[in-house]
Image 1 (cartoon, rainbow, N blue to C red):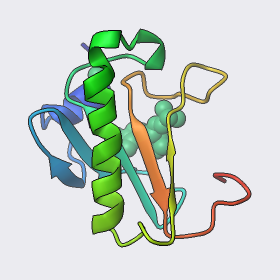
Image 2: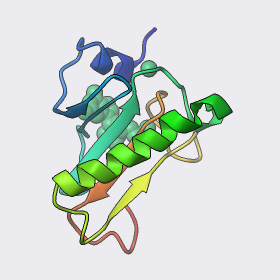
Image 3: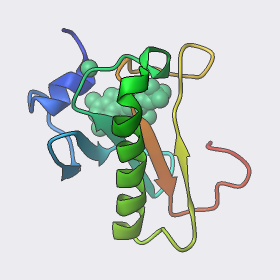
Image 4: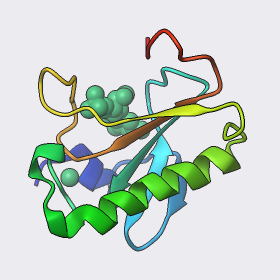
Length: 113
Ligand code: 5GP
Ligand code: ZN
């Protein structure tokens, strides 16, 4: 499968991985929009939120939990942060492997950009 994030999971494309376990990996976004900009993804290929099944509720919940853990480790938990899932063309999804953005380290009150 020609999926860039599956290649990152497989170690075929280098990335700055900050967290890994049997279910998820987290790495720095190559084009950060904030001082802290991490992507947290399931090892399992799920194309987008549109393809999430009810059986994957624990997995996606776990990904949000890992976002919380990483926010603490990155020192942004107290000031706050944003967790974003882009879905589909109008949602701005560019990479077709479900991922959660963790953004922080600056004020995001007025949007992501
Ligand atoms: P999307 O717009 O699909 O929600 O976000 C995809 C994100 O993946 C973008 O913020 C983009 O910068 C990031 N990205 C795309 N290709 C790579 C890559 O090869 N490595 C890393 N670390 N991030 C990537
Ligand atoms: Zn994939």
